[in-house]
Length: 164
Image (cartoon, rainbow, N blue to C red; front, side, top):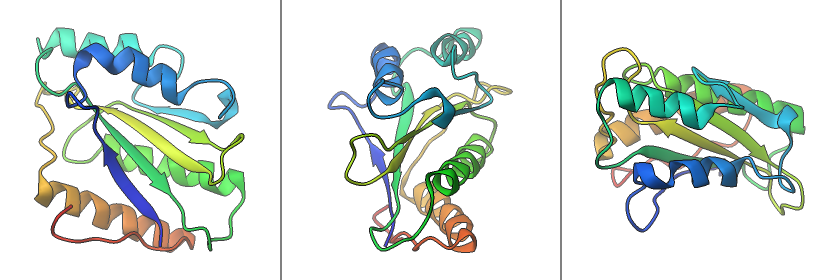
């Protein structure tokens, strides 16, 4: 089975750590530029572009972003190119999930036991300023949509339960 999880910093992913989290997922030694992708945001200026949306809508307080990780099953057979393409599709799905959000995707594969995808999503809609509320119900819906996508690609499904 594949795994799709939501990662939270001990303080709930505040805006104040967005820059360091983006640097973490883009760091040398685990990925390279060819395995990074931005949906609604550039890879090089993701922080500034996400902060601009927050500034336009005066959305600095509370949760600042969502951090997702997708890991295919150890039993799945794929190339890094296949996994990168899957990451792009997941990033685009998240970017258009219940609004228009900015998403930076990186594929970690260098010196990693299991290649996996990190997705950092701005939680403020670029068009409306509405904050994405990822409660259990919306998380289950998002996982169902991702599950449909990865099944079509041939990767093992993720577990979906009512607890998110």
